[in-house]
Amino acid sequence: MNRQQTLMPLPLAAEMIAAGQVLCIAGDEAALRQLPRGQWIGGTIPYFMTGDGGQVSRDQVFVTPVTGFAEPPRLRLRDRAALPGICRDAPESGYSIVIIPAFSDCHVEFAQHAPDYEEMYLKPLVGWIAGVHLDDLAQAKPRVVLGPTGEFADDCAVVMDVPLPPERFAQIDIVNLFHPGHGPAIVFPASGFTVGACSLDGQPGNLAEYLASAGIDTRLPLVADYCGALVNVSIKAVDRASGRVELYAPVFPGLDYRIAAPVDDYVASFHQALPGQTPEIAFSCNCILNYLHSGLEGKRTGDLVGPFTFGEIGYQLLNQTLVYLTVR
Image (cartoon, rainbow, N blue to C red):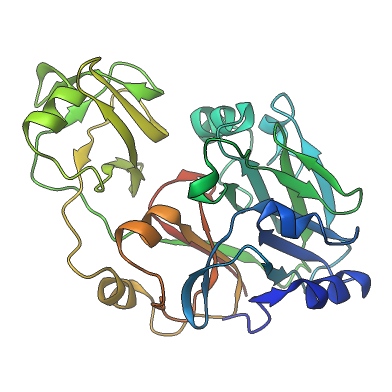
């Protein structure tokens, strides 16, 4: 655990910024707007895993210091057109942190096309999808912040490129407690965040109708094998009448998806999934759906702390997954 990663009052975060520290900050928009300009990037979210357990805070911010770099990190905004170059322009030795506003064009672009970006998977890319308090979904927009200018954006990603000395390297790990259940293999004809038609064990079908008629618990994600890694796609809403299902991440054609098997005890399963000896964590985040569906308020997930987000980034967009980065 990075002992400096913590939820803190605004004056303390402001002191760290004024001291010239390089920081990644998560918090409610109203809180972030009170911070001074400096060497930091940020994104909106008021849900956090802390050393005392999961909690909601609108008046504190979660601060992750960025240290150990070979030269000062580069901080910038990227619009949708510039996003595909995110890995190509990253340091040859180091890593990048990206925060993307939920429901934005950048979110859609990254979700659907990130696996095909130039030099993707060759340079570590970690980050999260900014969100809002769930009570504010109808009126608030997720935003990111470029600290040096104080600019807030709801239509751009914010990126921090962190060069490392040649003797150090960054490694991304994910903790996914879900695995495919025993239901039918679900294959989609096209990619997208909204789906309907599909095949179920090779027979024509409709996902909304299947979920409703089979009584599926839609808190469970779809799970597929993406080149050896199990990746979740979380279900946002089911409209049986229109035959449409909205998702928090896109599905891709030609892959076999299945509804995940239930996880009986998230906290116990999480502790079992963690490695015995975790090196110092440079960054971590978890999913808001894990917080909600697994009742994590007041409960800890080991030493891993960070924001609960609207999506996790471990190279590509992930759902209902914990992502962490270590520097060795």
